[in-house]
Amino acid sequence: MPDQQDLLDLLQEINAVAKEETKTCPMPVGIYIHEGEGLYTRATLDKDRLLEVGMVSELLDKLLARLGALRTAQANWEEMVSVRDEARKIWNEESPAMYDLREELIDHMEFAYRNDEVLLEKLDTIKEGDSQADAIQDLANLAVLGKNNIEPMETINYDITKFDLAATTADRMASVLGNVNGHMYVDDERKLIRDKAYTLLKEVVDEIRNYGRFVFRKDARHVKAYSSKYQRERMIEYRKKKKQTSEND
Image 1 (tube, rainbow, N blue to C red):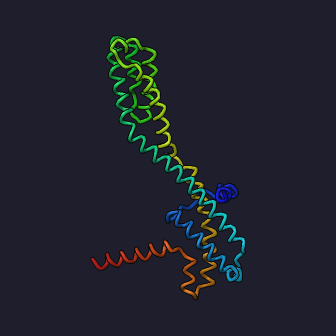
Image 2: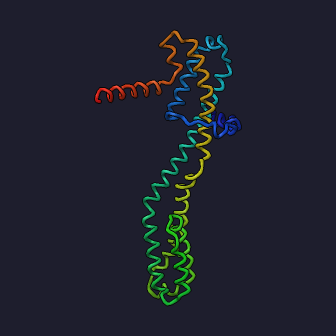
Image 3: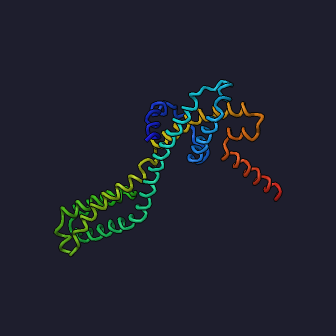
């Protein structure tokens, strides 16, 4: 796909953008890309006029390639966010049952092992910690402990298949929690690539807009094509609200 190839072709240049110079898009990225596409169309039509004041034609090629790169980088980021949101939904839906199973196992194992100090000490060790990750590890440890000491559990007529359930639940919920928390505390690579791709695109967009605003500086209607419609509308809305606030004071 062309957009994916644009990202691959520009990846070295994107990664070379210094972290401290990386910018974040001040509007929804999809809108910025849409405006960039409109700018490409407009500037292509005005190409001769723009070249007259020193713009190089390669700038339009750069604009097109960087639009494709950002489009793919944004899609990659949105895909990961979607996975994270789905994982958070699954966690919220399924974690109560996981906690209930953990408590059920502990209650029954404490009773079944009540006369075995060694096993009770192991249970006490398992119960230490109260994080989400701890709860998952507890299930895995309880499954192992229960399977290795099955007779006392059978004596109290406990459903020993729940040790298998505990093991599979621990595996599943560990994967879910990993998708929820995987990039929570570090800069996510996909987001960083997206922001760096935006930074590169912004350089070209700003440069072409500068040429356009100069060339058509005396044509108020035409020059609008070389500015952001989104930001103009936001500014109009801001001034409108500010005026209303002043009138109400």
